[in-house]
Image 1 (cartoon, helix red, strand yellow):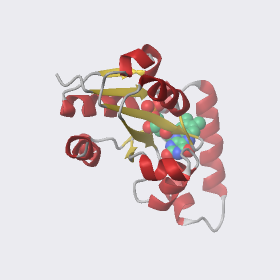
Image 2 (cartoon, rainbow, N blue to C red):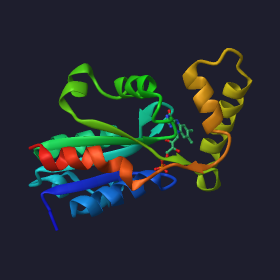
Image 3 (cartoon, rainbow, N blue to C red):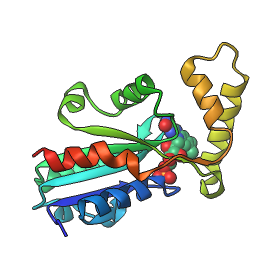
Length: 178
Ligand SMILES: Cc1cc2nc3c(=O)[nH]c(=O)nc-3n(C[C@H](O)[C@H](O)[C@H](O)COP(=O)(O)O)c2cc1C
């Protein structure tokens, strides 16, 4: 097991957790939930990979993960976010990253988007309500932008488009760079 890397995740309905487990499996390194770890658990490692879901444009847990990473003295942070936005919507995904990272961080911190899905069955009530409102609003809207059309098609019901294949660029990056 490669203890120089630690994968940390924050997940509500399981997609981000699944991606974290796949990454951990591929890199043969430990994986932990954000609420289970401290800065000490990160320290002494070369790399921390943190993943959270996109939630109304924000990456869940990112602030805390960055704080722990900052305290730990660990060398390298790699981020991933999991969401329902189709992979085809590159501009919107780039825009979402801009809402989460400063210009300097966008250049310095490698960040990857991994499309997951939606699981209405296990979503907390408040989230389910928000998604249903959002889905109804984009469905009703006339003259939809390509992003709105893609979201209207995607978010009406549960779906799972996660796949281990999608972690490849992140894994290659983690392995091949120092
Ligand atoms: C209330 C709410 C807001 C969301 N906002 C976004 C968003 O801004 N962008 C996005 O791509 N996905 C968004 N999603 C979809 C989740 O990121 C997606 O379902 C993800 O796979 C959940 O990850 P998890 O299973 O690890 O919790 C949202 C989901 C909910 C319930």
